[in-house]
Length: 313
Image 1 (tube, rainbow, N blue to C red):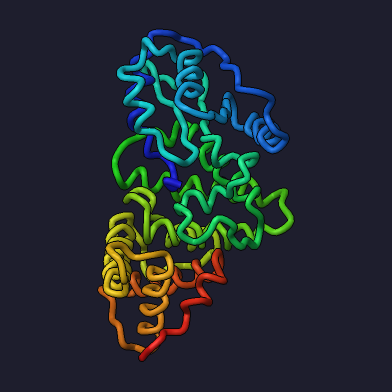
Image 2 (cartoon, rainbow, N blue to C red; image 1 turned 180 degrees about the vertical axis):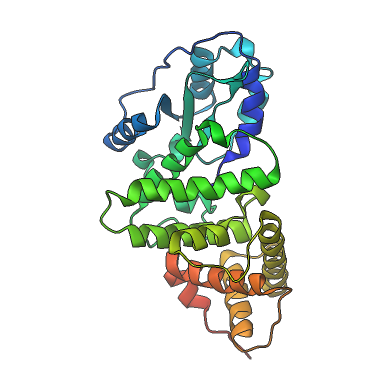
């Protein structure tokens, strides 16, 4: 996402500084596109949730001024500087009670009308700008917004790595269940979600978003061989990331590995595991590396195929 709640801890502190008891309705810039209008209507079933697409610093701060009042926010410029590139929620409590409205924000460059695919953007373009889906780019966007809606609910208020990790898993599965009732190909969306989470958890995400194994088990009804704790999953993803980037740096011809070199590293590690030549620190790490290879093949098959066969002199 990032995959997403990077901003929540900061925002909860902002919201606790509010001196008002109600929130004004902010005006959005321009006329919302049909996809955003549909999602806004869908979100009404969850309660008082506002969805905003903002273009830039000025647009974001204008909404903040309308809804919270910039005078109630310490260092608005610093707040804007810390915004993630993914959708994020602004919510919190005042005097022990939830504030009246939960706000979901989406940077305009990842909204449907931008022409950019949200999964591709959140994976930093490393695997291409036009990915291959079993569902669609639009459904993946909608899934992420429903994920954010889950974070609007009071039981997702809380701190700590273990709580945040559990909340992220819950939000992913909640959002999938919400959409699976109406879409034609829920299995396809589940496959896209698992691939996305596996790539981001292994390569980019912070600890709270290293959730791909738990999400996979939850969406596919796979029973892990043993109960998987947040700490176990985070340690496994960190170990897998270390192996991938060590191999990618060894393959790199420049200062930093390219996307092809990174993908090549993943395919080599997968091949070595299959052949018994690599024994990662735990079975979970082996599972991650194998799933990561499958995930790249799923979302970026041309890139994967271009480096899948190890070249030797």
